[in-house]
Image 1 (cartoon, rainbow, N blue to C red):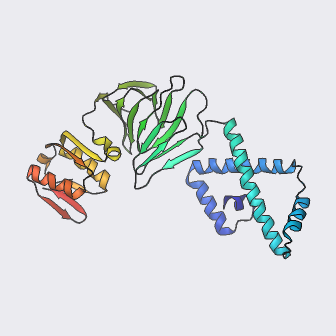
Image 2: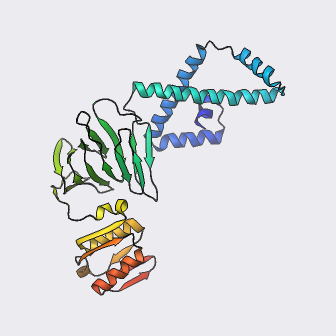
Length: 310
């Protein structure tokens, strides 16, 4: 549709859709401008081409002995032109990527399932559901920079000459070779380190985390001091386990609601800080609720798409 739009052949409905798409997100406008640049460059390439297209067409007809109506020839030429444009765009895209190596060329996103992706440097990223990353097709320059939305676990390949930098909201997370988890939502961003050293920077303030440490940054600007990571619940989407070590019930419920898309509500305040010590291995929500019921002798009731702990 964008090609049709550039050719000036889009109908009123297509023009409306493209205009709405352009207005919806600044990234869409950037993509369109890149495509337009490819289009303009392609016209210059075509203008300087030494290929005799008429002779090539005649040779094609002679070889295949196909004689079609003029309208069919016109349609064929339009399709051929589109194919040539796509090939030219791909080649020019490679050229632009060589010239502007920091422009993200790859994007990976998830909806309802987790996903594992290997980056150009061999680093491995596990994306939680409803998350996305974008990164250059090839890391160039002095850093390996990517962008993150949502939650992901990173296992970064060591390279002291080229730090690995993650942009998440207005925060930068920098490492050389380590493993850690980043989670961002509407209220805050948290970083939990499993191995190595991680530097977290916001508004010029930098905090260094080591293995077993974590920190949380509230969007309003307050940086919560680093602390020891209290449990391994954050790792559930990667390990398929809910590991509870003196974990308060409210925290387990929070993770269960996220993992299963449920709405579990603790109706009595005295239940929220009850501690649980167990590990659920790839268990269903009903199995986990049954253990909660038997452990604390509390009632579990399902009502109006909600699960009440009473």
